[in-house]
Amino acid sequence: EVQLVESGGGLVQPGGSLRLSCAASGFTFSRDWMSWVRQAPGMGLEWLANIKQDGSQRYYVDSVKGRFTISRDNAKNSLYLQMSSLRVEDTAVYYCARDGFAAALNDWGQGTLVTVSS
Amino acid sequence: QSALTQPASVSGSPGQSITISCTGTSSDVGGHNYVSWYQQYPGKAPKLMIFEVSNRPSGVPDRFSGAKSGNTASLTISGLQAEDEADYYCSSYTTSSTQVFGGGTKLTVL
Image 1 (spheres, rainbow over the protein chains, first blue to last red):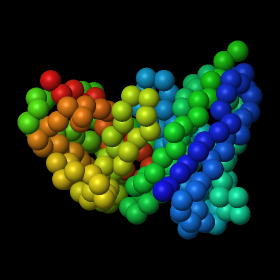
Image 2 (image 1 turned 180 degrees about the vertical axis):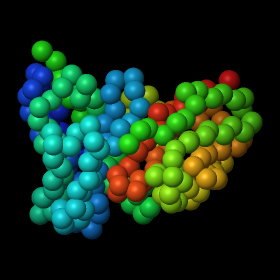
Image 3 (image 1 turned 45 degrees about the horizontal axis):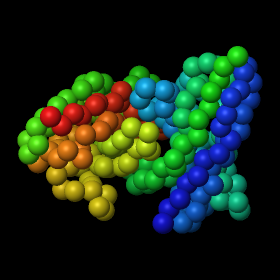
């Protein structure tokens, strides 16, 4: 069974930094693209970034380019999202997801809440 | 990278059919067939319901179907059931190798 478990969320001040982690199990992590998606309170889903199996390609939505960095450690079956220069509008539940065929997000974690507030 | 356009809400009675539209541009929905649909219950993670416009993952009932014409994709749920009441999101791969979601549609089963 595929399991994705996010961690690292919490309260951070505007301008601060935070690193989210996603622990993967139940599949061969190194064979799949992985993504981060977020959902602000009461709002819709926003795709943030994804990363190729070997980390050689990464893509970002414009709103986080230059502030967020996606990375992975295949030896640890882990996905990361380093977030810096955080803004109040970055407050959201952050999900990691496993990319599948045709860019579909086959599996999702339960999410971790990031709150940016002074 | 503007969000795809979905109706904010749709409703239907048990047993009826409903269709949710998802309109984009030639840079996303109209550019290829990498359109997916997700179901999300309150407080829960999204679940993939349709991929590549019209394909259902294993375990998704065949009451759920997808289609696309030009820059607009659609999700149809036939034989509506109470358990179908949820939020539904479309997404599309883009010509920039990113993804974009729709704003989401709240389905109410009357």
